[in-house]
Length: 281
Length: 285
Image 1 (cartoon, rainbow over the protein chains, first blue to last red):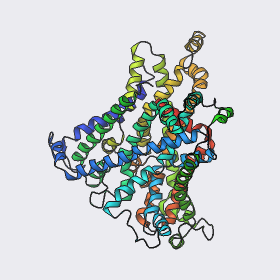
Image 2: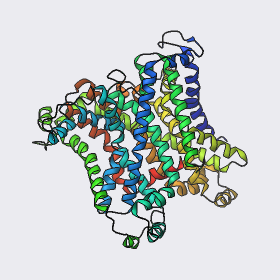
Image 3: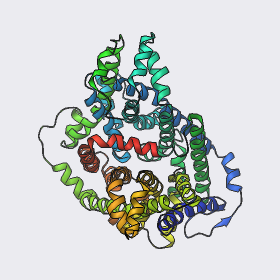
């Protein structure tokens, strides 16, 4: 018992206690560290309902998460393709995996160079279509959110493809052969044999990717667009950060935090159930 | 499991009409990954004028001007050292806290062990980012904003559930007869862990150290909020090249490269183990 105590205490004091604080602060009106904290009960939660920025952020987060999760489908197909060991598969794996371990900061900084005026994307567009008008990738409201999504999905397809490849390596080849002898084509083998074999792992990928997309967008939005123009690229996690550390609406920021927290928790539980991931798998 | 593939399994593959198309798509995606990385690498050797004249052209000459300027302006050397101290500190502390906890959980009789394991499993469900402000307020209340020690404690706490769970899993594989016979021979818990348990769980320890290293080296928001300029980490220092000198992409490119070097060194050194490690780590959670 004494052996486990330091871990429990550290976790309790620095994670669980702040989690309780988050709920407590979310019921207050509090504008800076120096200002007094005023208890307002559920008023902040009522305010959510009429906060247009909140709903914009929820909508944008939904788009980011949906787009990012859709990318897991080509990632699985790529992983299946790699598991057939095509020519160059070692090099493919190395290339596909490399952005996955890159710090998110580095990825976002790279995309600053990609999206900046006369940056990489402009040059590529110009090479394909010399008469094209220059596009504002970050400053145009219709491009800002797709730009954020692009920076999040860019490396993740490759990263997950390599992990799916590793999961598929544990699937017996005989299953595939049997299906092929029965006349199944490659497409059917991929979706009817390979996919069900790693379905729990795919569920785990959905879970981890969901959390990464929901929460990770804060950093991409912070450096690329700050949620703008307007609220066109405001995501829920960035809104939490913005209210807490930029606008200093400490109480309200924690109300948003609670929403983010509950969405994260609900998603974890739902996805676990949907893919049949055991608690102590 | 991963070693069971043999080359004979390949021979039965049916040729597919889709093979060239799939190869083309995979190659296209590889280009999409490589081009921005190539762009950053060459930009780190180019002046801004050169970058904008032709972003994809090789640099006209190679020197370290951008790197020297980036180190100077963002104090990257200091930040790199801060990152190293904080990450190594958190890795050491998480091992120091995690190993005994896992050992305790495995050795506890009755329901308590399972209960504690469940406690840490629940910990994996708690998203950490929403706790940014409360964790900052704790530091502010104790006058610990800017303290590397506080962020080492926070990082350790964040990584505690996964560390304990992975180590517990590996420790369950140590036969209890081995431990009991050593105890009968008069070995204390420290000796048992050091001479019997540790050698057997070292693959698990390497796994969790790699996972924790990558995660903590790359961490941004807690470092950004909890540290001050003198104690900031490399992930916080590099973007500062952007806010002040946005148009100087060459400096930023040099900073990006410096910040990714440790994880890529790790990738090269542990090439074979790393994807399997992340894989097993993901499975464990």
